[in-house]
Amino acid sequence: MAIARISVPEYINDTVALMAGDLVYLSGVIYVARDQAHRRLFDAIKKGERIPIDLGSSVIYYCGPTPAPKGIAIGSCGPTTSSRMDSYLPLLMKNGLRITIGKGGRSNEAIKSIKDYNGCYMIAAGGAGAFYSQFVKSYKVIAYSELRAEALAALVVKDMPLIVAVDSKGGSVFSDYAQVR
Image (cartoon, rainbow, N blue to C red; front, top):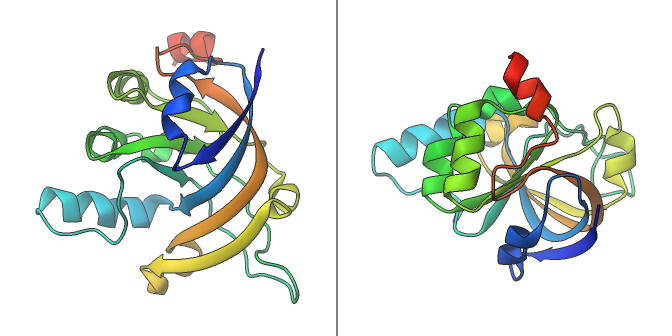
């Protein structure tokens, strides 16, 4: 296991050197999006419409944050189940998405997309939303505000600790899990 510090978007391509099981401290701008925001991004791309973020060299965190208590940037912001976004992943990666963050295993199709587009899937600890909120320096809704917790938002994070679950070569910490699914 290696330990890496990655700043995005500047050093997003450094993720190709990461291996499944590596510990990463991630800093920079990442986007929060869950099921409904993914559906809207996917549908807009399919229709040839402009989307509200540049997916090129982007990071999406599968998360539905809670409202921020007074004096801090965000409430609880733990990961949600990544496999729910697997059907959207190939098109989003084809359009520039490079890193996703969530919890749990990914489908074989998702792993293939990660490998095909030199991406990376990182996991955050489920049930640790309050812990992850301490790494968020700012939170701003970008689009789909009517979706509330599922709105598309930008987070600025500093040294957010994550584990590489699927690397750019298709290596996975869930290899046994993928075989029994």
